[in-house]
Length: 141
Image 1 (cartoon, rainbow, N blue to C red):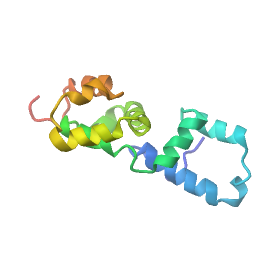
Image 2 (spheres, rainbow, N blue to C red):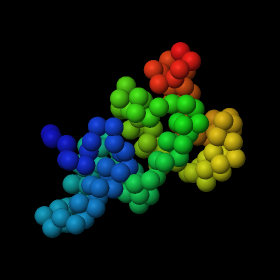
Image 3 (tube, rainbow, N blue to C red):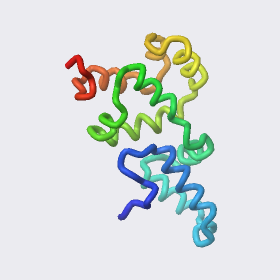
Image 4 (cartoon, one colour):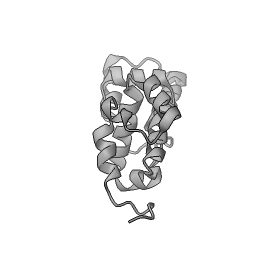
């Protein structure tokens, strides 16, 4: 199956879903899609229909806190995306679905280098594992 033009390698999963939803709701031939078609589309994206709806409702910037956290950890988003695209997209999905967004934003604003986020972030284990890897973008390795 060919990917639509808005699904670019390394692009934001949330932005791709928002573009898809905008196109889907604007297109006359798709406006009559039923529940089964929505389920199929969600399945194609590797999520449930309710997750898809939540992501669409949260908008294209829903995973911006992930990018800020990656900067705080000195993780290059492009390198992570290129090396582990599935992991990067999963990080975006999990971040966008997170219920601790306000707390995360507050912690990033106060002290991006702090460790409080590890107690509530659903991406903590993955980010800690990525942080331990020898990335080319880091000069210390």
